[in-house]
Image (cartoon, rainbow, N blue to C red; front, side, top):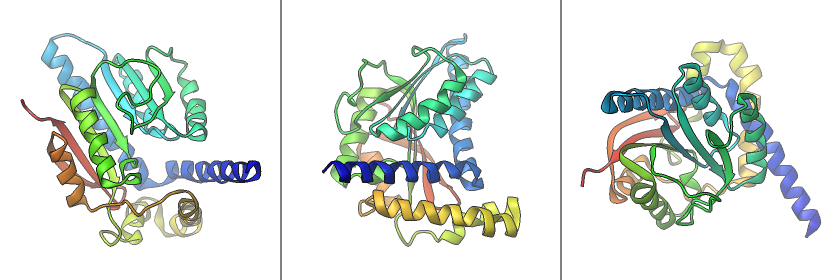
Length: 259
């Protein structure tokens, strides 16, 4: 049993190392920018609505290794936009990798916190009580759960954690057959060229794909249409649907449905 735990932990650490190579992958950078741009737009809208600068409250569900957390928080800091950011993930190794990145910002816990958590629990398994958030971000997380759990998670976030006029940013992989890996590579090829794509980035992506086979169960991946149905059923108003991650993902920009 102990040997199996060590092996599983080692596999997880290798996957995390390969996963962080995505920071060098143009479609991944573009996907992160979509999150950043949406948060900045919401921050500006909040200021306009309230007539004064107020902290934007952000909840990131399934923060992984902190790539999105770091990008969003860094951009808010650069623009002197006040914020309260809570991110969480259930995986200890993911959180440890994320904590190292976020330590660069040297922010107090009441401004930026990374906690252990569990999306399947009504209280998200968090050690603190949360106010409702102006923005909730979820990136490549929901596909890990069966449909009934997906719905329960979305319904909980919609009704208990998203503020009135808040936005929910969901980016999820498309189902098998809805995209090709060539679609993923095209943006990188366009920006970095054939040599960099073929001999530098492609081997990293293949290592990541192998790690996903060892760690991630993809049998619960669903089509973009089914994702849309679950969001509407859970109480979200979808105001924009875009392709992301080189057309491998669907990016849903949602708001709370008017009561």
